[in-house]
Length: 131
Image 1 (cartoon, rainbow, N blue to C red):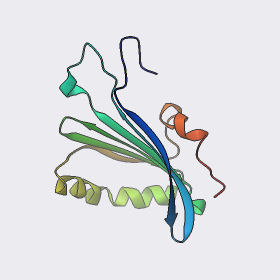
Image 2: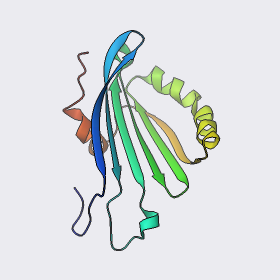
Image 3: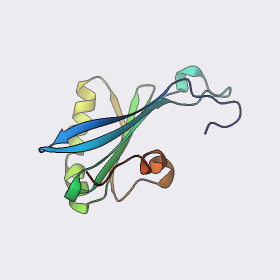
Image 4: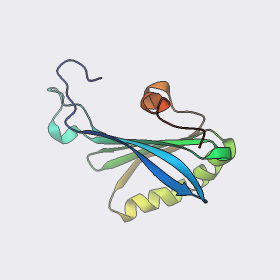
């Protein structure tokens, strides 16, 4: 919820059925622009995208991608320690991919476990873990 005097110019949320390794999964995606704030210049406002998907035995993978100015930050959470380790091993490739499409990588991190409750709040009631 934006603080007093702040508004979200744009906000989208969608559930996208996805087939991975022959199994159907539900990918929940949220995209929003940072809240407008009189104290911050328009050029300092950025965009955020969050997604979450439950991949059966692999567990849930969530991410938050933030674009502010020329910097792109990526935070990935994986429930399964092995999945988190595999993702961590590919961070250099992710940084190279960001550079290849003209984005400047900021913080690019992987964490084992679930995202903080505030980042995960919108997906908790929508993500169908039974599929």
